[in-house]
Image (cartoon, rainbow, N blue to C red; front, side):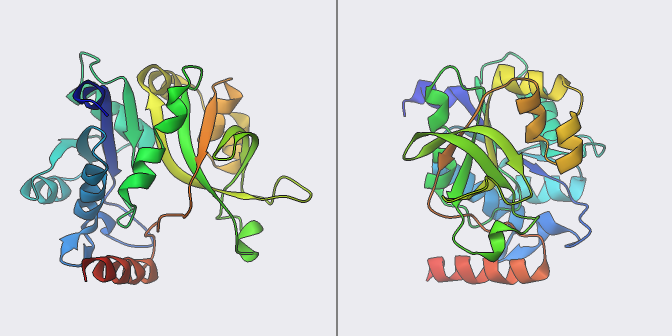
Length: 251
């Protein structure tokens, strides 16, 4: 990727301090660093563009800044990460230099650089508005678990789907693979601007999945198939697992 391409991409990491299942989640220690700093390090390792953390509390701001990463303060009122990254985008890039915005969730401390880079590939097709990631579900229990979001899509190649629907139920019916959605997104700037301006859709409300808002509005989402699901840290048990994973990599 050329330097001009790096200028086109902005990686934004939303970090919300409030968490019911894991209080103070962005600041949770993992191998001697706050989780949000570990995520920023993973995003920087991907080397796809400028990395900025979007926070809602001064405490988190100070920690990220002290670690040497760019950080921006955003409103505490945002309920979803897309709204937070859009506010951050308008503040850090008001002139519209960045053409692609990558949203890396702030609770993915073990995500590898190649997985982050994979999210950009579907945007090589100019008809795609939003790109995201998925992997084949191997665990039988995950196929019916409502907390595992499934992608229903039509295959475009061995490594890519065009998303038709996202659901918490087991779908589609019949023989064949089921796909676990990974909530990392790459938006064209214009697509993100349009997305955050839309009213919440009927299906989004019903499934509690904001990406359905885009599909209901006729936006195109393509999905890159990757090998593994990065660990999302939501509980103390997840935190312990993340510690073990990063500790093993360090050694």
